[in-house]
Length: 221
Image (cartoon, rainbow, N blue to C red; front, side, top):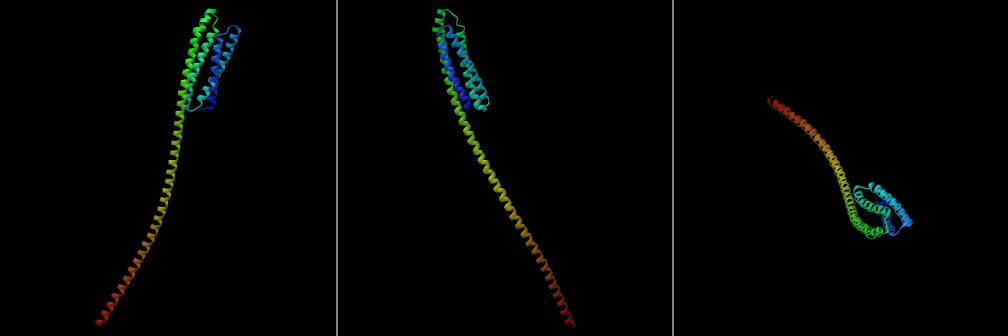
């Protein structure tokens, strides 16, 4: 996961917690103190929105599998921020009489804070699930990288074996060429010897025939 995103996330979590506390405090005070606290809350909400925008930009620049996990987190943070905005609207529109205000503090505000607490519990549970999903994604990436390295190693071995086969083929081809050349030379030499032997034998036969003819001729005379 992006360290930049995690940094923004920590800042947002701290800011959101502080804003919740300020909303609780603002609900129990009146007059100028309340206005000042609401102004602080609004400034904090603006800062929180800025952090969410930064997290959104950072998440969308990451790999698809990681981006999906982070964008799911952002949806929870945006929902949490909307609850804070709703709380501020209730505080701003709180020009009620004392009894109505007391009733709001005792019932409506308590319900809102309870809802906010429930929302945070769900947010923490969702964050935990997303962290586990992120861990599984990391493990999947590690397995994928190991598989890729194994594939590269196998391809290198196959390439090396191919080079060895090509070298062996070249060597065998060279030996065959040499043997064929030698065989041709031997056959040519044998052919020449056979031809020479034929001429010699023919000459001997011719000489014998002439000798026999001469012998017969002289015997008759």
